[in-house]
Image (cartoon, rainbow, N blue to C red):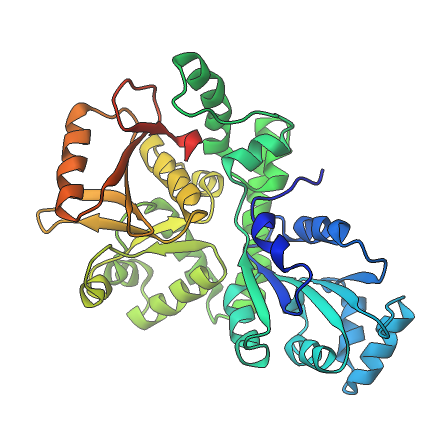
Length: 386
């Protein structure tokens, strides 16, 4: 089932531009399906899709003479005498792809659409060869609104829902919270199938990203760190403690964290501050890529799981940070340096009062409590509204 992803609205203005469109994100978030959707939107018949996860297809791009690559593509039906559209899926499997893309861009009228699952790989390899000639888009697991669309629920999330509407949407949100936003998981029809699909997502990530791309000496150490991190969703990142628990050097922990963040398994949220130096010194917080995956790995409590889901929703809207006073008082999330959000299962008036005081101190005028349960407090929204 092809549905329009929210990110497509950002990609659409650049469909006719000369620049290469690069779509990256964690494995199994729907990059291939998005590529197919974009392929359908291109009206030209002079277009071709190639899946580079297939070893036979990779041979096309292994030629030393790039003109022979062009000949092979022409043999598959691409006409290089006019504007051509080439869609390449899973480009991380072809190591010389940046130079091939650059050559064809320099010599022919080719519009490229590329997908790959490893952010650090794509950014490093394409940073110089396609400097100023590419647009990079990051795809994440389905938002709650996309979740509803994929399930065939033509529902528009209401603003200021009544208790009746809250119950209607919260029943769907409960499922989203427990099983997350990976498309293959959403499409499963019972709990056992969803759990098995989540296990497959994790296994696929570990086998294809960690073991193949990571090339680590001790796979079991980074596996154990994955499990420890899942238990720490929403917590501050204590590198020293991780180092001690895993029995590895701090430098190795930092190396693992960089890899896991670069391949979208984790997200590191840094503190909000008016001073860049202070922001760097303070301890960051940690979230995973998906609430369902976090729940499957660590069996999180409802509060941590809800906070993880809210982080995912806010991440789609821009830059996410958190704020903490020296006294210890926190605001869970600061979005784009201008909106504050405090996440509560059942918020109280004291929570709102505290949020107001902190926001006055840091000069943020837009603030809201995000509640899981129904609430009659002012300045409250629900998880399914974010």
